[in-house]
Image (tube, rainbow, N blue to C red; front, side, top):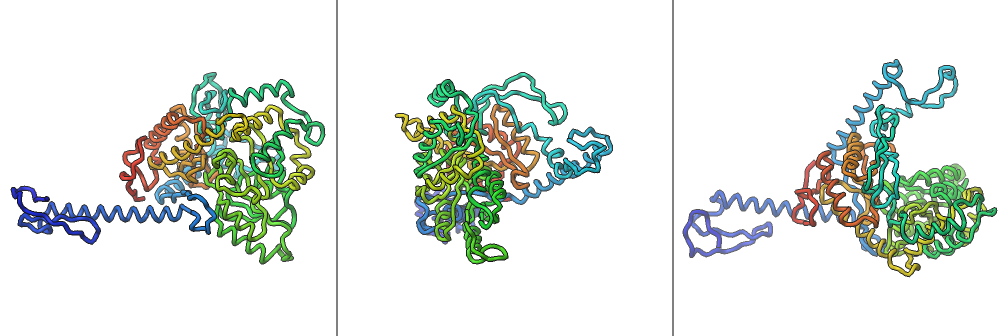
Length: 586
């Protein structure tokens, strides 16, 4: 029963009717009509506005989910699980202020260059001698403009020396600069127990205790540290053979071979696979090692939009229809080059669609799993395991041991004929020195741990814990109001900073709170998309992540980094509640 304030009636009956908006409106039987009662009228209008607001918000969220979730129903059953990625658009005001910030820095940069030219300000950059002015210049002043005028201002956020194992926590050597980051001096002080959110130690195997460290120590005593020869001479150890067989078994392919450097695994093997008359279709955000390898191959390179299957299919169709330039002969080989996890975006390749396209157009697929191997999939077997696909559908599987395995080097895996060909044609296999025995042992021990061949469930537990930590950390950052890029299951978590001044400020403020993070800006990212990149690890406990989230929330409030238009109020570390979402206008 609903009564108007000030009435004493206790016997008046009430009736309910459903208005057009689907809510329930109580009719008042106190002698006043609802539309003439100011309080009731205002309450009724507020109720209607609230219902409309909720409906509008639900429609927006449904549209966003339809755009983000690419399930099997949208792609003919290619996906066995929802594929959720988020790339929230940069707010217009933030973009304008970011451009203004770079513009101001550029103006002051030219002013400082003018002062340096007239010897008013001291110049620290490398320059040619006066007597060599007529020679071809070694140092391009204009090309180094960004480095000397923008990068130097925040250079203290990078190249910080550590003096411990890069585990969940690490020790940093403190340094100071008295000339605005042109040079650094060590103070002799060590900052202990800095929470590590920058290392690619996804499964926590970068440690100095446990079975991996013990096995590596034993092998060091038996074999030494270096081999001092290539694999084709006298540098091929029994441990190398065992490691490569184990890698092939782990990936579910016929054969595999290992290399001493992850970067060289891409840059030196792609030229062995393609050459003149071949076409390479490369994702626009591929790693520098893939780009370098493609350029060294001499093949024609065409770039498709990041993770955009329509763009890739368009290039495939044009390649089939038109063939090679001028002659229009068919391409000798078409190679699609993608990554499992893109380390700057936190996105996961749409592998089921890529495989469908490469089968339809009879192309080859080169998959770089540097960040995804060990970090994705219920068994830690990478992006192929994550989507539940057949490894044989990927022609060339590449990965590194530097991240999830806590070691060094890389591998190429696939059919036996492919591996035998690379053993004699790859420059990295013929000329490079063999992998160090303790590094090989680290790989063998950690991989057996993940596979469960060590007789324990430690590896499976680490894979599961990494997945849980990733989902939890991403969810909490979104709840706080930060713009987070990438897939919900990616352990690489980019948080957008945008403005150039906030790049250095965020890194310094986090270090003050004993947290080490990686900040990234132009030219590694687009000019208005500077970001902090967190790398989640299985070695991070929930208490440790909560402490980090609290610090990020605090710094985010200080620096005003909560740009997301879907924000939770108040932005505190607390359980998730759908009812407190609100839309924020630009």
